[in-house]
Image (tube, rainbow, N blue to C red; front, side, top):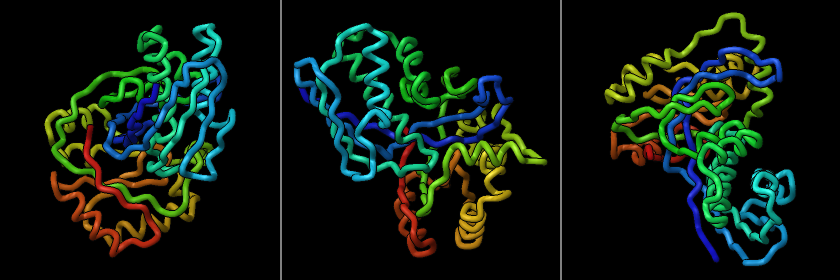
Amino acid sequence: MRVSVKSNAKINIGLNIVEKLENGYHSLDMIMVPISLADELDINFTGKKGRLIISSNIKDIPTDERNILWKVYDAFYKFIKKEPDEIEVYLNKVIPHEAGLGGGSSNGAFFLKELNKYNDNILDDEKLIEIGKSVGADIPFFIKNYPCRVKGIGEKLEKIENNLNCDVVLVKPSFGVSTKEAYTLYSTLQNKKDANIDMVKEGLKENNLKKVEENSENILEQGLLTSNENIKCFRRILEKECSTRFFMSGSGSCYYTFCMKGEGQEYANLLRTKVSNCQIYSCSFL
């Protein structure tokens, strides 16, 4: 049995760190919204017992136990205490790596949901979230895949309304940012400015872009702007060359801006004449 699944990205609209936990993780308060930019998973359930076989259009992606698909596969079958099925997965990557768009976590979540379907929906969403959070912090969000206020380490999900009538334009520079570096630099911040998540939530519900933008802050970006020369330089270029406000998603390095509905592609084309060595995408909210 073959299935083809779109595995979409997300953006963060506001990201606060509440505290560092004893286990080394951080408790967060943020808004995450799914967007249309997507990878594709071509999954072949061979009908035999065996192992996972991964291939991809990106040569540098590991296809062994380091891959998030492998980790999800292993965790799922251990959880249900069943001999693993032989499954072939071709991963067509479109979502940029080390961008803060959740591409790997999305792949893991959508694969986990397909594993569950193939096994007669043996687990409910809460069990899938339990498995997912053991593999990656953003996987629980993609299990639900609707606009959420996200707390804890990513497992506490509150569904919210997003009525913002906008296109989203992404600008991913040629460099990435490791999540570890982003959190390390955050810890050195002297002056921190939190997002007003309540007001961002209101703005999304009311289709009030001004309220959303005025109350959005990303604490991880603030840390990166203290010491990461790539981010500092790229931010300056965006501010100099572009007329709209840009926001970093997650731990970066991708930035996004909002456009009037239907004008995203035109603005993306304009940005390509102003900002070089970038991947630029026009997207919509899901």
